Length: 330
Image (cartoon, rainbow, N blue to C red):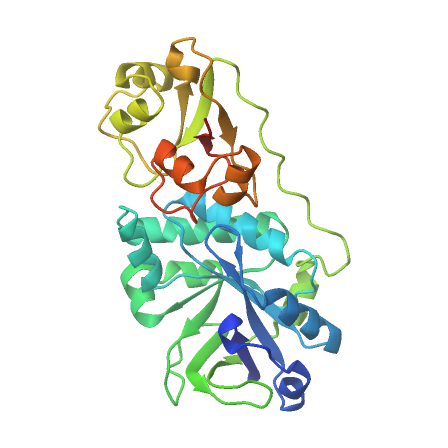
């Protein structure tokens, strides 16, 4: 079986999907977004048009996760973005060297065990929500970070630019980034499918093709007790830095969270922080970030500025905030 396909993102601009389909392409993998809930600017148009003309689609989400927990958050952002569309192909996690480089910039070293945990966490979340999971990478990244076990567990979309296929066990092979087809200006990635995913997904009852919507993500947890707030440890955080930021002490944080070694904390873990530093002061105000929030939106909500929130919370990248994290707004 050899099925002609392509994959696109906002970088291909406005695609004439009717011309693409007329040229004999039988499936498309669309970038839905990347990171925490950043939606590809062309995704909704691309998905709507493909659904309208009956061209089968799957989606991919680019990985900027730095922990298994943030991979799950990325999966939730992806699933929320795609929920209104028919998908006859898998939901794919795209992890590459750029993902590792981004994590390094955030103070996190992605090694092989962590890379596997990140992919597994995303794919498992996709499966929990009733979709067919897949991951994408190239040969070098597969050999260096992921190994042979993941392609045995999840569908694999393999990137290797060459004139002939090397026989790697995969469901889709991306063979060039310099394709040229009717309906698209400039270069485009081209693929060959080796699995009849529409039939496999339909037979497995996945991707909600029966019209039933996926179960919604759990509602945000109830607000914590008045005695403490929750905080998701960010790459580069230290316990002393968190203590200083929230007006408390390392000793208080260690006691409240059962931390035996204050020098050993992990990005992505959640800790409790004494509200108002445990001092009884009522001057500070906190907010728990919700799915879809932006720092600029939170700033408007509380009558402050992005720079003030960034300074108050030690946020180095205002575009990178995570649902479930509690930040100080005053």
